Amino acid sequence: MHRRHLTFALCAALGCAGILVGCATAPSDAEISAKAAAMLKASFKERGQAKLDRLDQDDTQKTCSEYAGRVPPKDVVDRIEKVNLASIRWPADGKFLGDWKSGEKIAQEGRGKQYSDDPAGPVGANCYACHQLAPQEVSYGTIGPSLYQFAKVRGYGLEIQKYAYGKVFNPEAYAACTLMPRFGHNGILTEQQIKDVVALLMDPASPVNK
Amino acid sequence: MGAVQRRIGRGTAIVLALFAPVVLGQGSVVDEIAKYRAALQDGNPAELWEVRGEDLWKQKRGPNAVSLERCDLGLGPGGVKGAYAQLPKYFADADRVMDLESRIVWCMVKLQGYTDADAKRNPFGAGNDKKADMEALVAYVTSESRGIRMNVGLNHPKEQEAYRLGEKIFFYRGGPHDFGCATCHGDDNKRIRLQDLPNLTKTEGAQKAYTTWPAYRVSQGELRSFQWRLNDCFRQQRFPELEFTSDASVALTMFLARNANGAAYDAPAIKR
Image 1 (cartoon, one colour):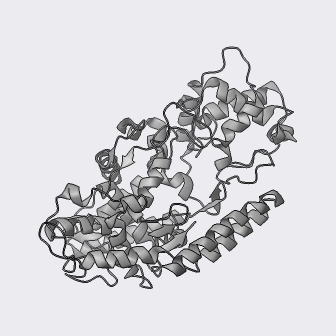
Image 2 (cartoon, rainbow over the protein chains, first blue to last red):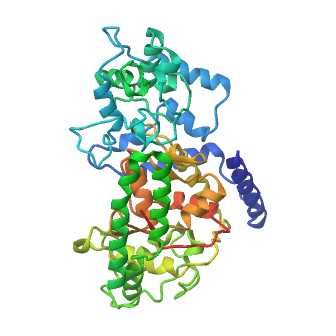
């Protein structure tokens, strides 16, 4: 909401400046987007495992960047969710639950994929950075919703297990332009790691459901 | 010096005390962190960087053996007081928008005769064995804007364009985690773990954040510049490494600095 105020204020400022400097045509929004992407490419250098191709955007990243934190219109949302849902690789054995104790370790682990991290691992999901999960961990973030009692309130059935697996694998399939990373789609976590995190959410024995 | 060391010692004791209340629940942890932050304000080792930076600024250095006292930070040669509160800005001699660090590099090259590579060689310090003159210079110049209201202009077309590019970069999502600046800094009252996150898309959040950098980081024992702040954000975004004084870094700084306009500048600060 407030973002729009800033943008309006800027447009007003640009308008005034335009008159003062003789109305040179300001670049269009699309031109600025293209220039920003090129500027980024020229402003970073590869380091460790973080190569420059990390600045290349897929359609989902590009589209969500353009909407700048706002929810896109329904047709765009539908397109993003459809493409991402279709690309989910479901477990070949049809099982969604791994070991919740291993899932807790993955949820705590903040390392992985930074140029300062060992490429050999570990790579975690760092769930607690953004979510409340097990109540014993009081150092949790609030960027995402609380997941405490995830299955206790939703049910422990196979459909919810499948949803949880898909959501961790590729959350863009369920909420276009979500802030949550696509842990499976982008190769951050392995299939087994995702199953372990799903178990942390879904296993009746998990502290999340106590 | 002795007083500063005593203050740091006291800060360490408070950090240790913090571990005890964790079991009591999150509310008390957040309260204790607030108390710790308040206690830190008591004394700021950033003064050591400010003093060293002023000395470096006035020393005859480089192949030309001249000081930086004739460096034009936007207020004309020699004007340091209040200069940082108006940066970044367009400089006609360089024909580009520059932030403070870019301009210091410019002056080191043009006045003191350093090569561009030498001027940029050691931007971020790492302990006593690898002190960064750049961060000391930044500490000195920024300290000379303390108490002055942020007043970053968008008069030149290149300033206007830098702001718009910076806004695009702020919302640019990429890398294996799809992260952009806005992932963590686009909403109110969010935390990562227990760390509060400023909403940089709002005036109040941008003002509070921008006017408190550079800062002495207790956890690192270093004075950290705004260029460092951006560099380390992108590391955590899983991006490649942001190059020191790159165009993207300056454009992003323009977006954030301009959004902080109207607030009294209050740094070098001290942070956890």
